[in-house]
Length: 186
View 1 (tube, rainbow, N blue to C red):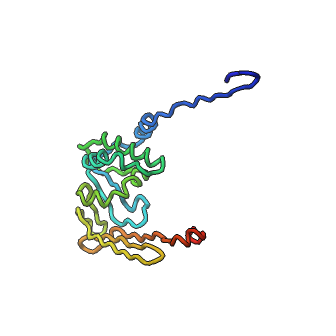
View 2 (tube, one colour):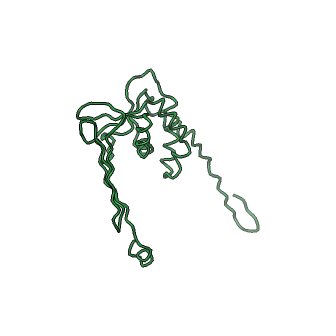
View 3 (cartoon, rainbow, N blue to C red):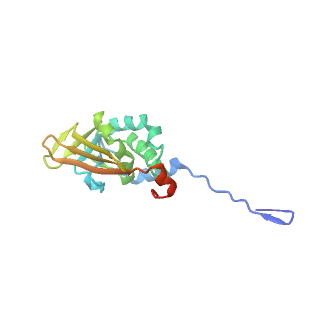
């Protein structure tokens, strides 16, 4: 605080936020990353997933580092921090530990939009819980329709035995410029 010409000027100094320190503290609370990572599972509560997606931690680390800019590009602030924490957590992986690490919900949120790419690049594998088979490619059926006033799609993944692994319906409403102008599409 300072005083000048009869007025009190209050100047606050905020403590600097150290992202690395905060993320480091968070990482200390997690179990060490093992050689395999369960990146998506029905256990995580994500709708539509019926199979497990498992990735090799060393390959996932390389992938995450190569996508470091893209991982946090348009995330909410907490997912941007989670993407940063994920990269650091993968760097500390114990590749001699053959168990499968589970990840926090925020790490799964960071990775969920990259799962198709991870499977295509054979960084991740899919485990069918019904036939207990591990495979690197799913029979991915994408059905899409473009009907006014929306864009609608179904994303369906099946194992070679035909068991459903993932099912997602999506819809993006489409509005004409007249509807938007008149406020009908809001």
